[in-house]
Length: 350
Image (cartoon, rainbow, N blue to C red):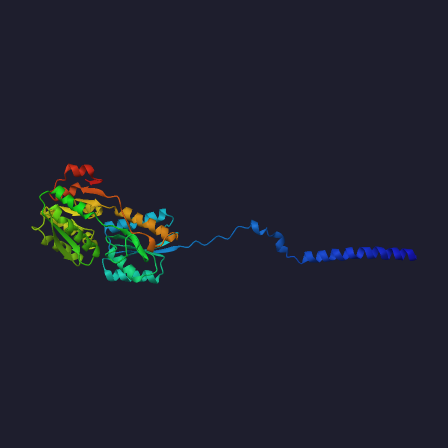
Protein backbone atom coordinates (compact mmCIF):
# COMPACT_ATOMS: atom_id res chain seq x y z
CA UNK A 1 0.00 0.00 0.00
CA UNK A 2 2.75 2.39 0.85
CA UNK A 3 4.48 1.53 -2.39
CA UNK A 4 1.32 2.26 -4.39
CA UNK A 5 0.97 5.71 -2.78
CA UNK A 6 4.59 6.43 -3.49
CA UNK A 7 4.18 5.42 -7.13
CA UNK A 8 1.09 7.63 -7.47
CA UNK A 9 2.97 10.63 -6.03
CA UNK A 10 5.77 10.08 -8.55
CA UNK A 11 3.30 9.99 -11.43
CA UNK A 12 1.60 13.19 -10.15
CA UNK A 13 4.90 15.00 -9.78
CA UNK A 14 5.74 14.04 -13.35
CA UNK A 15 2.37 15.00 -14.87
CA UNK A 16 1.83 18.28 -12.97
CA UNK A 17 4.50 20.32 -14.81
CA UNK A 18 3.16 19.03 -18.13
CA UNK A 19 -0.34 19.99 -17.17
CA UNK A 20 0.80 23.45 -16.04
CA UNK A 21 2.66 23.99 -19.34
CA UNK A 22 -0.43 23.00 -21.33
CA UNK A 23 -2.66 25.36 -19.38
CA UNK A 24 -0.19 28.25 -19.85
CA UNK A 25 -0.02 27.66 -23.58
CA UNK A 26 -3.78 27.60 -23.87
CA UNK A 27 -3.94 30.83 -21.91
CA UNK A 28 -1.57 32.48 -24.30
CA UNK A 29 -3.64 31.34 -27.31
CA UNK A 30 -6.83 32.69 -25.90
CA UNK A 31 -5.18 36.12 -25.34
CA UNK A 32 -4.60 36.52 -29.09
CA UNK A 33 -7.45 38.40 -30.85
CA UNK A 34 -9.49 36.16 -33.15
CA UNK A 35 -9.45 38.78 -35.90
CA UNK A 36 -5.67 38.41 -36.31
CA UNK A 37 -6.15 34.82 -37.38
CA UNK A 38 -8.11 36.04 -40.47
CA UNK A 39 -5.79 38.98 -41.39
CA UNK A 40 -3.39 38.15 -44.20
CA UNK A 41 0.26 39.11 -43.81
CA UNK A 42 0.88 42.84 -44.18
CA UNK A 43 3.03 42.26 -47.24
CA UNK A 44 0.03 40.82 -49.11
CA UNK A 45 -2.22 43.85 -48.51
CA UNK A 46 -2.53 46.43 -51.38
CA UNK A 47 -1.10 49.86 -50.63
CA UNK A 48 -3.70 52.60 -50.21
CA UNK A 49 -4.26 54.62 -53.42
CA UNK A 50 -2.43 57.96 -53.45
CA UNK A 51 -4.58 61.04 -53.94
CA UNK A 52 -3.98 62.77 -57.30
CA UNK A 53 -3.93 66.55 -57.11
CA UNK A 54 -6.14 68.43 -59.54
CA UNK A 55 -4.25 71.52 -60.67
CA UNK A 56 -6.06 74.82 -61.12
CA UNK A 57 -5.17 76.87 -64.21
CA UNK A 58 -6.46 80.37 -64.89
CA UNK A 59 -6.55 81.60 -68.50
CA UNK A 60 -6.85 85.35 -69.04
CA UNK A 61 -7.45 86.41 -72.66
CA UNK A 62 -7.37 90.10 -73.49
CA UNK A 63 -10.04 90.02 -76.19
CA UNK A 64 -11.74 87.43 -78.34
CA UNK A 65 -10.57 87.24 -81.95
CA UNK A 66 -9.49 84.30 -84.15
CA UNK A 67 -5.74 84.51 -83.46
CA UNK A 68 -6.01 84.62 -79.67
CA UNK A 69 -8.82 82.04 -79.71
CA UNK A 70 -6.55 79.72 -81.71
CA UNK A 71 -3.72 80.16 -79.20
CA UNK A 72 -6.07 79.29 -76.32
CA UNK A 73 -7.54 76.26 -78.08
CA UNK A 74 -4.10 74.99 -79.04
CA UNK A 75 -2.94 75.36 -75.44
CA UNK A 76 -5.87 73.41 -73.95
CA UNK A 77 -5.67 70.61 -76.54
CA UNK A 78 -1.91 70.17 -76.22
CA UNK A 79 -2.10 70.29 -72.42
CA UNK A 80 -4.47 67.30 -72.56
CA UNK A 81 -1.97 65.46 -74.76
CA UNK A 82 0.60 66.06 -72.04
CA UNK A 83 -1.67 64.31 -69.51
CA UNK A 84 -3.48 67.36 -68.12
CA UNK A 85 -7.07 67.17 -69.35
CA UNK A 86 -9.57 69.82 -68.32
CA UNK A 87 -12.02 68.42 -65.77
CA UNK A 88 -9.67 65.58 -64.82
CA UNK A 89 -6.05 66.33 -63.95
CA UNK A 90 -6.65 70.10 -64.26
CA UNK A 91 -9.51 72.52 -63.82
CA UNK A 92 -9.29 75.41 -66.28
CA UNK A 93 -10.98 78.75 -65.64
CA UNK A 94 -11.15 80.90 -68.81
CA UNK A 95 -11.79 84.65 -68.54
CA UNK A 96 -11.90 87.39 -71.18
CA UNK A 97 -10.93 90.98 -70.38
CA UNK A 98 -13.00 92.24 -73.34
CA UNK A 99 -10.16 94.60 -74.32
CA UNK A 100 -10.26 96.36 -70.91
CA UNK A 101 -7.08 96.72 -68.86
CA UNK A 102 -9.15 97.26 -65.69
CA UNK A 103 -10.92 93.97 -66.30
CA UNK A 104 -7.60 92.25 -66.98
CA UNK A 105 -6.36 93.42 -63.57
CA UNK A 106 -9.55 92.20 -61.87
CA UNK A 107 -9.12 88.78 -63.50
CA UNK A 108 -5.50 88.63 -62.33
CA UNK A 109 -6.57 89.49 -58.79
CA UNK A 110 -9.22 86.75 -58.84
CA UNK A 111 -6.69 84.14 -59.94
CA UNK A 112 -4.37 85.30 -57.15
CA UNK A 113 -7.16 84.98 -54.58
CA UNK A 114 -8.13 81.55 -55.92
CA UNK A 115 -4.51 80.42 -55.52
CA UNK A 116 -4.38 78.86 -58.98
CA UNK A 117 -1.35 76.70 -59.76
CA UNK A 118 -0.58 78.39 -63.08
CA UNK A 119 -1.79 81.37 -65.13
CA UNK A 120 -1.86 81.55 -68.92
CA UNK A 121 -2.05 85.16 -70.10
CA UNK A 122 -2.97 85.56 -73.77
CA UNK A 123 -1.72 88.89 -75.22
CA UNK A 124 0.49 91.60 -73.74
CA UNK A 125 -2.02 93.57 -71.61
CA UNK A 126 -3.26 90.49 -69.72
CA UNK A 127 0.31 89.30 -69.27
CA UNK A 128 1.25 92.66 -67.77
CA UNK A 129 -1.78 92.55 -65.44
CA UNK A 130 -0.92 89.04 -64.28
CA UNK A 131 2.77 89.83 -63.76
CA UNK A 132 1.97 92.94 -61.72
CA UNK A 133 -0.49 91.05 -59.52
CA UNK A 134 1.18 87.70 -58.83
CA UNK A 135 4.81 87.31 -57.83
CA UNK A 136 4.76 83.64 -56.82
CA UNK A 137 2.28 81.90 -59.13
CA UNK A 138 3.92 80.61 -62.34
CA UNK A 139 2.74 82.77 -65.25
CA UNK A 140 3.02 81.79 -68.91
CA UNK A 141 2.22 84.26 -71.66
CA UNK A 142 1.54 83.74 -75.34
CA UNK A 143 0.86 86.11 -78.24
CA UNK A 144 3.22 88.68 -76.72
CA UNK A 145 5.38 90.47 -79.29
CA UNK A 146 8.22 91.85 -77.17
CA UNK A 147 8.18 90.58 -73.56
CA UNK A 148 11.32 92.53 -72.65
CA UNK A 149 9.91 95.86 -73.86
CA UNK A 150 6.62 95.02 -72.12
CA UNK A 151 8.49 94.58 -68.82
CA UNK A 152 7.52 90.93 -68.45
CA UNK A 153 11.00 89.38 -68.42
CA UNK A 154 14.53 90.61 -67.78
CA UNK A 155 15.93 88.78 -70.79
CA UNK A 156 14.61 86.41 -73.45
CA UNK A 157 17.05 83.63 -72.54
CA UNK A 158 16.69 83.91 -68.74
CA UNK A 159 13.46 85.62 -67.61
CA UNK A 160 14.55 85.68 -63.97
CA UNK A 161 11.19 85.66 -62.13
CA UNK A 162 7.86 83.81 -62.24
CA UNK A 163 6.99 84.79 -65.82
CA UNK A 164 7.94 83.31 -69.22
CA UNK A 165 6.18 82.09 -72.35
CA UNK A 166 6.05 82.36 -76.13
CA UNK A 167 6.45 85.40 -78.37
CA UNK A 168 4.55 86.11 -81.58
CA UNK A 169 7.07 88.64 -82.89
CA UNK A 170 6.39 89.05 -86.61
CA UNK A 171 8.86 89.10 -89.49
CA UNK A 172 7.69 92.65 -90.25
CA UNK A 173 10.18 93.25 -93.06
CA UNK A 174 9.15 90.05 -94.85
CA UNK A 175 5.51 91.02 -94.49
CA UNK A 176 6.03 94.50 -95.95
CA UNK A 177 7.91 92.95 -98.87
CA UNK A 178 4.64 91.23 -99.81
CA UNK A 179 3.17 94.67 -100.55
CA UNK A 180 5.95 95.51 -103.02
CA UNK A 181 5.66 92.07 -104.60
CA UNK A 182 1.92 92.46 -105.22
CA UNK A 183 1.99 96.18 -105.96
CA UNK A 184 5.50 97.20 -107.08
CA UNK A 185 4.55 100.88 -107.45
CA UNK A 186 3.35 101.14 -103.83
CA UNK A 187 4.98 104.05 -101.97
CA UNK A 188 3.09 104.48 -98.71
CA UNK A 189 1.60 102.06 -96.18
CA UNK A 190 -1.04 102.90 -93.59
CA UNK A 191 -0.72 101.28 -90.17
CA UNK A 192 -3.57 101.48 -87.65
CA UNK A 193 -2.64 100.54 -84.11
CA UNK A 194 -3.72 100.89 -80.50
CA UNK A 195 -1.70 103.49 -78.60
CA UNK A 196 -2.23 101.49 -75.40
CA UNK A 197 -0.61 98.28 -76.63
CA UNK A 198 3.17 98.04 -76.28
CA UNK A 199 3.31 95.13 -78.72
CA UNK A 200 1.71 97.26 -81.43
CA UNK A 201 4.13 100.17 -81.00
CA UNK A 202 7.01 97.69 -81.29
CA UNK A 203 5.69 96.53 -84.68
CA UNK A 204 5.14 100.07 -85.93
CA UNK A 205 8.72 100.96 -84.99
CA UNK A 206 9.95 97.81 -86.76
CA UNK A 207 8.01 98.80 -89.88
CA UNK A 208 9.53 102.29 -89.82
CA UNK A 209 13.02 100.85 -89.44
CA UNK A 210 12.80 98.81 -92.64
CA UNK A 211 10.47 100.98 -94.74
CA UNK A 212 13.15 103.17 -96.34
CA UNK A 213 15.14 100.31 -97.83
CA UNK A 214 11.93 98.90 -99.28
CA UNK A 215 11.04 102.23 -100.87
CA UNK A 216 8.07 102.74 -98.58
CA UNK A 217 6.89 105.32 -96.09
CA UNK A 218 4.75 104.52 -93.04
CA UNK A 219 1.62 106.53 -92.27
CA UNK A 220 0.44 105.99 -88.68
CA UNK A 221 -3.02 106.23 -87.16
CA UNK A 222 -3.23 105.57 -83.42
CA UNK A 223 -6.56 104.64 -81.84
CA UNK A 224 -7.77 104.26 -78.27
CA UNK A 225 -10.90 102.15 -78.86
CA UNK A 226 -12.28 99.70 -81.41
CA UNK A 227 -14.93 102.20 -82.48
CA UNK A 228 -12.19 104.41 -83.96
CA UNK A 229 -10.84 101.77 -86.36
CA UNK A 230 -13.07 102.53 -89.35
CA UNK A 231 -12.58 106.28 -89.01
CA UNK A 232 -8.80 105.77 -88.89
CA UNK A 233 -8.91 103.71 -92.07
CA UNK A 234 -11.08 106.27 -93.84
CA UNK A 235 -8.68 109.07 -92.86
CA UNK A 236 -5.94 107.34 -94.88
CA UNK A 237 -7.87 107.00 -98.13
CA UNK A 238 -5.99 108.82 -100.88
CA UNK A 239 -2.82 108.91 -98.78
CA UNK A 240 -1.74 105.26 -98.75
CA UNK A 241 -1.28 102.52 -101.34
CA UNK A 242 -1.78 99.64 -98.90
CA UNK A 243 -2.77 98.85 -95.32
CA UNK A 244 -0.62 96.85 -92.93
CA UNK A 245 -2.50 95.37 -89.95
CA UNK A 246 -0.07 94.30 -87.20
CA UNK A 247 -1.03 91.84 -84.47
CA UNK A 248 -2.81 94.60 -82.59
CA UNK A 249 -5.62 93.05 -80.53
CA UNK A 250 -7.98 96.00 -80.77
CA UNK A 251 -7.56 96.44 -84.52
CA UNK A 252 -7.67 92.72 -85.33
CA UNK A 253 -10.88 92.33 -83.32
CA UNK A 254 -12.36 95.02 -85.61
CA UNK A 255 -10.61 94.09 -88.84
CA UNK A 256 -13.94 93.99 -90.66
CA UNK A 257 -13.98 97.81 -90.43
CA UNK A 258 -10.59 98.06 -92.17
CA UNK A 259 -11.62 95.54 -94.82
CA UNK A 260 -14.83 97.40 -95.67
CA UNK A 261 -12.83 100.56 -96.44
CA UNK A 262 -10.10 98.64 -98.28
CA UNK A 263 -12.55 96.80 -100.52
CA UNK A 264 -14.51 99.96 -101.33
CA UNK A 265 -11.34 101.90 -102.20
CA UNK A 266 -9.38 98.99 -103.75
CA UNK A 267 -6.53 99.24 -101.23
CA UNK A 268 -4.74 95.91 -100.52
CA UNK A 269 -4.44 94.77 -96.92
CA UNK A 270 -1.45 92.81 -95.61
CA UNK A 271 -1.80 91.29 -92.14
CA UNK A 272 0.48 90.30 -89.31
CA UNK A 273 -1.02 86.83 -88.88
CA UNK A 274 -2.94 84.19 -90.83
CA UNK A 275 -6.31 84.41 -89.08
CA UNK A 276 -6.66 87.97 -90.35
CA UNK A 277 -6.06 86.63 -93.87
CA UNK A 278 -8.79 84.05 -93.34
CA UNK A 279 -11.01 86.94 -92.25
CA UNK A 280 -10.39 88.85 -95.50
CA UNK A 281 -6.88 90.34 -95.71
CA UNK A 282 -4.88 89.37 -98.81
CA UNK A 283 -1.68 87.92 -97.39
CA UNK A 284 0.67 87.34 -94.50
CA UNK A 285 3.95 85.64 -93.84
CA UNK A 286 4.01 84.57 -90.25
CA UNK A 287 3.25 82.18 -87.44
CA UNK A 288 0.48 79.71 -86.67
CA UNK A 289 -1.26 80.73 -83.42
CA UNK A 290 -2.62 77.24 -82.77
CA UNK A 291 0.93 75.91 -82.82
CA UNK A 292 2.07 78.80 -80.63
CA UNK A 293 -0.53 77.78 -78.05
CA UNK A 294 0.63 74.16 -78.28
CA UNK A 295 4.23 75.26 -77.74
CA UNK A 296 3.15 77.15 -74.62
CA UNK A 297 1.30 74.07 -73.32
CA UNK A 298 4.48 72.01 -73.54
CA UNK A 299 6.14 74.61 -71.30
CA UNK A 300 3.20 74.46 -68.88
CA UNK A 301 3.47 70.68 -68.61
CA UNK A 302 7.11 70.97 -67.53
CA UNK A 303 6.14 73.46 -64.81
CA UNK A 304 3.25 71.33 -63.51
CA UNK A 305 5.51 68.26 -63.40
CA UNK A 306 8.08 70.19 -61.39
CA UNK A 307 10.70 69.77 -64.09
CA UNK A 308 11.31 73.49 -64.64
CA UNK A 309 10.66 76.96 -63.24
CA UNK A 310 9.70 80.04 -65.26
CA UNK A 311 12.76 81.95 -64.09
CA UNK A 312 15.02 79.52 -65.93
CA UNK A 313 12.86 78.85 -69.01
CA UNK A 314 13.84 80.91 -72.05
CA UNK A 315 11.08 82.73 -73.91
CA UNK A 316 10.33 80.68 -77.01
CA UNK A 317 9.51 81.79 -80.54
CA UNK A 318 8.08 79.86 -83.45
CA UNK A 319 10.68 78.89 -86.00
CA UNK A 320 8.33 77.82 -88.80
CA UNK A 321 6.73 80.62 -90.81
CA UNK A 322 4.40 80.23 -93.76
CA UNK A 323 2.96 82.34 -96.55
CA UNK A 324 -0.85 82.47 -96.50
CA UNK A 325 -2.80 84.01 -99.39
CA UNK A 326 -6.48 84.83 -99.91
CA UNK A 327 -7.38 84.94 -103.62
CA UNK A 328 -10.97 86.09 -103.07
CA UNK A 329 -9.78 88.99 -100.92
CA UNK A 330 -7.30 90.00 -103.62
CA UNK A 331 -10.12 90.15 -106.18
CA UNK A 332 -12.24 92.35 -103.89
CA UNK A 333 -9.33 94.77 -103.50
CA UNK A 334 -8.45 94.84 -107.19
CA UNK A 335 -5.11 93.02 -106.85
CA UNK A 336 -3.75 90.09 -108.83
CA UNK A 337 -1.53 87.81 -106.77
CA UNK A 338 1.64 86.97 -108.75
CA UNK A 339 2.10 83.32 -109.66
CA UNK A 340 5.49 83.34 -107.93
CA UNK A 341 3.72 84.00 -104.62
CA UNK A 342 1.07 81.34 -105.25
CA UNK A 343 3.78 78.78 -106.04
CA UNK A 344 5.54 79.19 -102.69
CA UNK A 345 2.46 79.69 -100.50
CA UNK A 346 1.93 77.34 -97.59
CA UNK A 347 -1.82 77.92 -97.82
CA UNK A 348 -4.06 79.50 -100.43
CA UNK A 349 -7.61 80.45 -99.54
CA UNK A 350 -9.78 80.34 -102.67
